[in-house]
Image 1 (cartoon, helix red, strand yellow):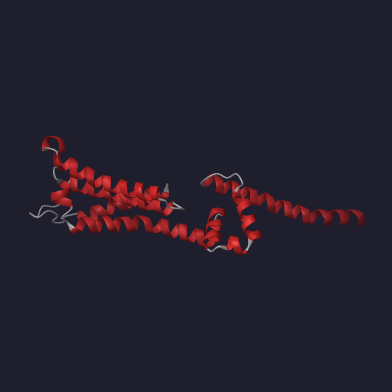
Image 2: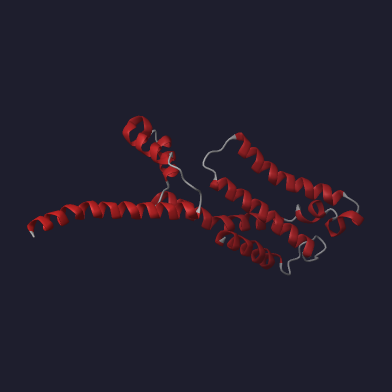
Length: 203
């Protein structure tokens, strides 16, 4: 939720700041509501698809196709919708061909907003993988560095941990903390029980 709120604020305010009072069209006109809204939605599409790519652990041709297709489909829609008569397309008549595509500011804004939206998320997943990795992160590194071949015992241990029933997201982290807390209590009780028995025999 916090990531979504941050991205929405970045997309909205960066576009407002960049396009405010800028001579956007060739005739010197500033960007209107249609141009601004189209630029914002373009940034949303890029930011979301980049976050999807960062979330994925394994790429196949299907992922590459779907991510690329979703971006290309947006531009195709803009072109086709802009080719419709003004009574149907309204203010979006030829908006991409005549207004957005020729403007370097539009492309630079798309790149800047996309990077700004994804930098915190990239930093988060990098920190998590480096200092607090999950089981599947460890297994991915073991497979990447071929540790499963060099150390079969470690590979078997980590693979068995990954097969345990887990959930995704916040509930999985809470469940893992509860299990860790129970294990700590069990260890403490196993250490204290011999001492208590020894004290009882002395009395």
